[in-house]
Image (cartoon, rainbow, N blue to C red; front, top):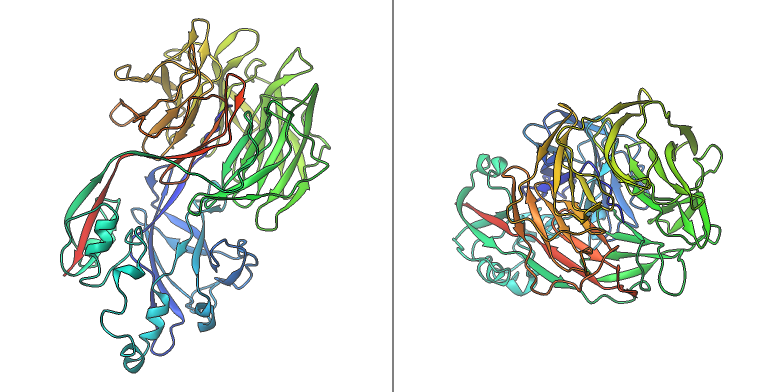
Length: 568
């Protein structure tokens, strides 16, 4: 299954939201850090805010009052972001497109802050995860001294705090010790403590916190027994919404499939998604996430190549069919990327004989297709890599009867192709893993003329150059594996060599080094599974091994450092 690279936005909550008001609080001071492609954002950004329930099915408040069922508000707020850091007072009606927050919002037991961000290139993207305002209830009780005094000292004990609740959360003096120990951390000091994965949390230092130490947490695998998983399968698709993984379609020994489910890793539960009877079963199709919806397109169904698709709304649990008017011809094993406003389909295979080098751009807002020029396009192929850089789609590699190691960059604004440099390119292959780092496309593994490969390279579209990847400590050669980008490393796992494998590695482009993943509690060997990155962990699901199809779920967390800050 081809892994599609996406430009990744991440959000780090640096300080807990704090309610402020002379009487009942109606304002929230919020500070955060936003990165684009792993780099601190540094410009004016557009933000949208909403207060929602735990599964974002209900909106309690939004910056302009228009959000319904956890969806985006209509209007946005422009905020200057410096070194990735930004701050805003939510509910301050003095700001444009901001309405007050009603105190009744916090009568709900679980209130979470949902944020959308637009860097000016990719459209509004949902940042993840939604931030739970765990301190709000106590902040409201502290609105007056008489009310605050009704909470006796020692009432809020460590028993009231979940074992992972310390992450990015300010704890009162004396409340931290047991909670930190339960999270595998030590080095507790007296005073309020913040844990952060950011070693240079400037906003914390500016707020008067002192860096007091750090704790190293090793890599780990966690097989998660989940209730009501979908039936076994491979060649399916998986996307990450910011809070849930959605899998759909694929094949098993019994049939082609047109069903799917949503998995929330935090609760280890699956929710079956609605089925659109008009959307036929398929495998080797594509799936992209728009920020609010999943779009399925193309694929193969038991002798029939397809050029239809569906748009799934997880909030409403409903499907809308993709228009076939002007759509590309039927195909499977193509690639699809999301630009922020359009889905671009390219390449693939049809009619058991035809390799393709055409495609189309689909705008879900207008439900219209725009053809892609074939002038200077790469030669026809299937199982190629495609990534989105923020302004161009890069297509590389694949199979057209022979293996390919060439490609080109497509600019949708000008509808033009630019050939990629061939000097230094990896050897020809298909079924490779490919990711976009924010500045480079990384290609690794796959199947070529010599069989499974353990090589790769990095491509910089600005300089149009390739760079070698380290061969030291490289994982075993493989194809049909998964690959994800964490923001600093590419993680590859699974696939097939002369037999199926259940190992992998982490590649760090900054140091040009590999680290082999631990095998302790890792999933069973497989290929054609899916792997997604949630922002802090990799989730693997499904796949097959020698005709045995799978539906188990495992989570991998890479090593990380937690830094401790003390407020004297």
